[in-house]
Length: 606
Image 1: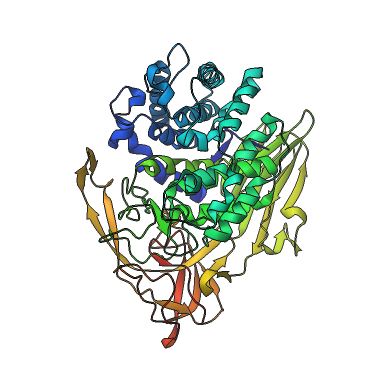
Image 2: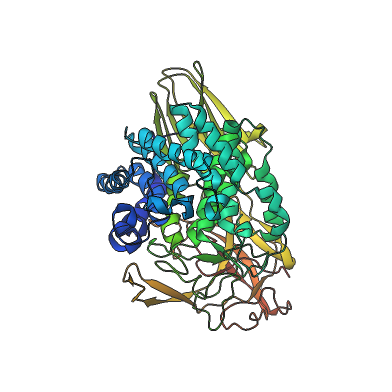
C-alpha cells in the first residue's frame, strides 16, 4: 500500500492539536534556539554537521506541510536550499571535505537522502530528483570502486538509504540503482545473524545491541526485498519476538539505554527508539497490510511517545522507565547500563542531543499513516489504518473522521465519493460488541470492515465498540493494566525543579531548559483485586494531559513494603522486597501511561 501526501491528508481534532503543540515548542524552534541546528555545518556554520539537521528536517518538514504553515515551510526551504547549494560537482552533499570521505561515516548520506525524498513528497520541489540522483550515483561509484566501505552507523543502518533508492528507481529505473542496493545489502549488517546477542544484555555498548539500530532494522526487509528481487519472509516478526521475549516492556517497546537492557521495569528506553520503532511499524504495515503492525504501532504511539515528552513538548527524556518514581540526577553512578546519570531528566538534550532532533518525526509520520491506498488502472482501495481524527481529499473523494479514539471508541465517517472505490476500516483485535451503522457484530474477518462506494454517493458511517479493561501478565510475577491500545499506570505526584544554565556552548533557558521531576507522591502499591472500570472525561487541549487525562481506570490497590533499588535513593527496587499488604485496600485512578510522567506501571497482584 502507498502513503498519501501531506496535501491530501490533514489531521483534525486532538491529533491536530498535538501537532500544533509540537510546532509551537522544540520541534518548531530548534533552528532558532539550538546551536546544532541554528549554526549547523550543513548550512555553512561551525556546529554539528552530521545527523542532527537531517534528523530535525525529517520531522519538521512533514509537520510544516501537515499544518500548512507558510513560515515553517519557508524555513524548511531555507535549509534545503543551503544544503543543495553546498553540493559538490561530484554529487557529494555532506559537510565534509572530499579528501576526508574515505574516513567519513556515510550514515549521513543515507539520512540526508531520505530527508530529500521526504521534502520532495511534501513540496514537489522539482530540483530534488536530480539532486538525489547525483548524491546516490556518487555514493554508488565510491562503493563500487572500493574508495569507501560501509562501517560504523552506516554499516548498521544501510537500509535507511532504501527510502531514497526506491524513489529514484521509480523516477529513473536505471541498473546502477539496483546495484547500489545490492552493494549496501552486501556490506551492511546481517541482523538475524546477531540474534543470540539480544538474549543476555550486558553493561557494554555495542552496535549489535544498540536499541535504535535494532528498531530501525525491523523494516529492513520491507524496504529492500522488492528492489533486491528477494522473497519476503517476515524477518521483522522473528526479530520482534526475540526482542520482546528478552527485553520487552508493557507498552510495546524494548528496553535500551542505549543498548538492550533486559526485562527490568527500572531500565530505560531511548526516545530515538520510540520514534524509529513507530516508523518501522508504519513501513511494515504499508508493505505487508498485516494488521498486527498497525496495532503495535498504536501501542507505542499512544503510550511510549507522550510519556517521555513534557505536556508542552519543550522538554523530553532521553530514556523512559516503566516504573519511574523520580527523575532526579543519580548521585554517584548511573542506574542505566550505558547511559549517564541525567538520561531520565526532562530537558533540551539530556544525555545526548540525537533525540532532541529525532523525536520530531514521530507524530507527523504517525499522522501520515492514518490512511493508505492501493490503486490499479480500474480500482482504488483506501484503508483507514489508524482511526484518528483526520480528513482525506483524494481524486474527488473526501473522507472525514470525527473521533476521540484512543480515549473513546466511537467513530463517525462522512464520505463523499467523487469516484468509485473500496473503503476499508481496520477494527482492532481487542474490539468487542462491534456496532456498525446500527448492526452488531461479535467479530470481523481479517479485522477490516469494507464499504463499496460508487461515483456520486455520500454516506455517514458510524462505528462503535467496547474495550474491556484487563490485566496483562509481566515478568517477575507483576501485572499491568490495559484497555484497548492504552496501558495504565498509578500516577506519582511530583514537583518540577527547573535548571537554566549553559554547558559546552549550549544554553538552557526557559522554556527550553532542563527539569528534574522530584517524586513526592506515594508509589509503593500492589493491586488488591482484578476488577477495573473505565471513566471517560473530556479530552483536554493537551490531548495526553498529565493533569487532566481524557480517560482513567478505577482500581483497588494496597500499600506494600516495596523498597528501593540497592545504592539509589529515588529508584524503586526492580521487584518488591515484600508483598504482604500494609493496611486495607483503597480506590485509585490509573492514568494512561502517556499521561503519567512519573508512574508505577508493573505491580504485583495480591
